[in-house]
Length: 235
Length: 235
DNA sequence: CCTCGATGCGGTACTCGGTGCCGGAAACAC
DNA sequence: GTGTTTCCGGCACCGAGTACCGCATCGAGG
Figure: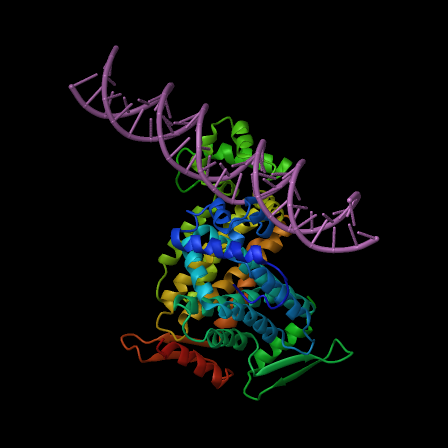
């Protein structure tokens, strides 16, 4: 299950636990399956289950921890010249790629999370960590901006919502179509709402009180003024 | 605790359970307090606790269920002439008002949810229900709009994020300042990003293929075209 | 006044998720 | 061969949540 291309040399027992768990979850339901059932089918001790998964719910999302680490590294490797919004959109694409790598697995998991309340709640906590990671990145990028934290929180939430919109639509269709293309369209909606091509504001080098504005003649003055104010004004 | 002005004639035992629970939670922590401790302090049977609260976490958020019902009723009472974005912003203000009614209680609960992971996860599920309620409303309002569901999901997420931004800032300050004013400012940011004063598009009566556009001379043409396309185009 | 049914509360026993602890087996260094 | 580390299994235990039963109270009706 999943692309173990990154590391983890011998997760044999872990994989067998995941396989046994999903086999039972799909044939008799999540809540009707106890941890004892899983470890019995996998042929291991009960204590070993909780060594690899801190809770019963974690076995349903075995790859999110790795994906979150990938996203954190991706954002940490950003350059100051990158458009922050484009960067977080690309970061969201990482998550969609992870889902797209195993369509059948993702669709099966989606069925579970839709029916079982506890799993949906757990998924919310995972999504929240993604959103927090994106928000933290935007917050540092917009630290000197007026209402920078508010803007960071709202944009992060919007990116996550657009990503989930495309993801859920793809999952509901049973894994048909191109999920990457769908998420591109959804994220493009978010990008154009906050960083339209018409206005680009960048701080000048070695002088914090000066910004460079590149825009089109068709852009109305109030929008240019708002962007400049937001970029120059103290927090 | 809370304004029991709506209904529930005799929640005496319920209130005493809430009081006992918070007393113990604040003095020795949430996870260090068992349900037996709560019912012992309240002087009631253990079984009665789960009669009023389906889980131990529910006693921390005793008023959210009522607030969610209020929001649902508020949105159901909307008129077609209301701007949907303004409407959901007003709906979000309902939640902030509930928090503002009991500042000390809200701040105490905030301390708990910040430290205890399980409570934060539970709070996420509550917030998700608010966001879903707002999203469902916007979805029906924008059913005939191009990318209506995407727009509804993104706007709902942005409204929730802006509300939570103001709420958390107010809670972190210990309940000082005017939370309503803070949430107004945060929601104003969301409103101006999607429904700026410059462009207003409304469908004409009894003819779905005609819209009325009111805008200013300073608005660039591409923005007007995008709004008209979004309002006219089939899903 | 007595009876009957409904409702609300408490007690007991049970399931199951999750943790701490310990003992044993395998892998590895010297 | 011996000591050490690591991994695994078994056991006991805790606490949340549930099913079931028994009891008390209260109001309606004869």
